[in-house]
Amino acid sequence: IPIASVYCGTNSTFACAKSGTFFAWGGNECGQLGLGDQVNRPYPEELKAINGGDMRHFSAGASHCIFADTNGNCWLWGSNSRGQCGFEQTEPACYLTPTKHPLLSRLNVIQGACGDTHSLVIVESRSKFALRNVYSFGNGEEGRLGMNSTEDSRTPLCVEYLRNDSVQLVACGAKHSIAVSSDGKIFTWGDGSMGQLGHAGHFFFNRKVTPKALAVNVSSVSILKATFAHSVFASGKEQ
Image (cartoon, rainbow, N blue to C red; front, side, top):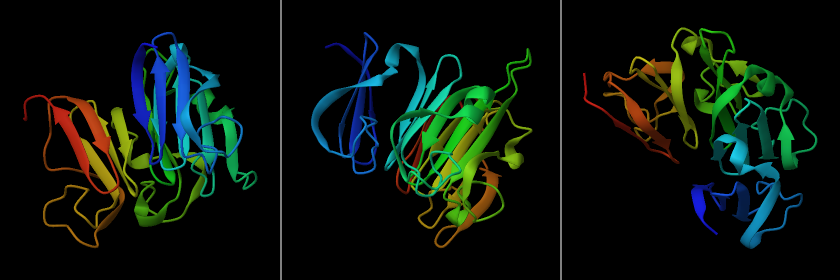
């Protein structure tokens, strides 16, 4: 089967075939494979609830996933233990199949990112100005939601500190977050105890509860990635 793209969560793997068929396999203790149960899969199995041909963006975290289609609709599934799927109710604790999020789908999601127990999405207005904002939800410890707080949020809330910056990319590490604006600013926040926020002079036991811009601006960022406790981006010429 010709494969177009592959994605990895902490212990799960997903692949989208060129035909649009979506496959999932690996760990499934929280239903993060979206297959309707909590049984691990040693081999790829088709995730029939998702049409990869309509995919705009996909992200897999430790135990939950975000899928945005080309119409701006957003589906989430897996663990919602800290609200990382964006559903306010505490039951069920795990969403075993892709579940459309009513608020996020109205907001027109163009990208999502999954951390261990928190999530970020970029939404774009449907007006001619195509304004973009970042919403965060889930575990708020270490300030990873960017809300000037360490409280959890079980519903998606706009990150007000980024409202005036047209964000193009977001990424989540286990406990930290990154956003890149259209003018080349790179913002980081959350846990910085291992230097993953990239702010000189602030290393161990450091955290930022609101987004803070790095001291470097770049002309463009084509790749933005964050894993457990480090961050990386690929850019054009430094300014």
